[in-house]
Amino acid sequence: MTKLFANFLNLMINIFIFCLPRWKRLPVKARLYDKLRPFETIWFEGKKLSLFTPDRTSVYWAKSGANSEPTTNAWINSFDNKDTFLDIGANIGLYSMMAATRGLSRVYAVEPNPYTFSVLTRNVAENQFGSRIVPLNIAMARTSSIVSFNLSGLGAGTALNEIVFKQEDINNMSIIVPSFSLDEFVHIQGISEINHIKIDVDGLEVEILRGADKTLSHRGLKTVLVEDNTQQENQKSKLNMFFEQYGLQQSNVWGNNPAHNKIFLRK
Image (tube, rainbow, N blue to C red; front, side):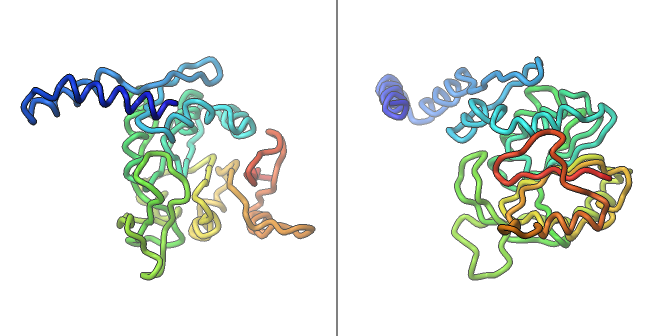
């Protein structure tokens, strides 16, 4: 129904401006786009956030994203306002902005997809979080390098994008992006400590964590939220065992998280 209605409106607009010269029609459409201003207001802990919604995936985040993971919301709401938060796989920046509303002094929002990143930066600017959120159009991996990054689509907020390591795995929508290990990123940025980390990168979580030895060892790190796809029935998760060597244990303090998300807390 929405697609049909949108197509009808587009047809009517094209009919109305058909008589205009070509280079007059385009500015009319551009001005119309600016007038429509596809933003939606959502609320987090009584505070208003404005989300840019240029496509259907972005609309999902505005409609359901803020309520899709209550445990993640509770976790973010527990942050101290002096904490530093690293959001790896920040998407359009929803959780980064939730953290910023808590008054955090610094939030690093990492998103390698250029289409999604453009929406993230628009959201940061629209909500006036430029002094708190640092958007970074880079990837994270085990080592620092230049990598191929396969896009699953040309829209913002899409899932199943991935770093590829073999030439034969590169698809027709592959781009080249700079990649950093977490430890080198922290060093280059001159960050004294990261207090909370969220990693949501479609299966490369362990690869990123293996490049974060110094960061994970730092006593200032309090919690890590990560999606765990290593759990096998009746066996201890490889990710749980990995974090234990750094003094981080899985915690249900904030509730049970859906979609295999786990929160690890410093003992």
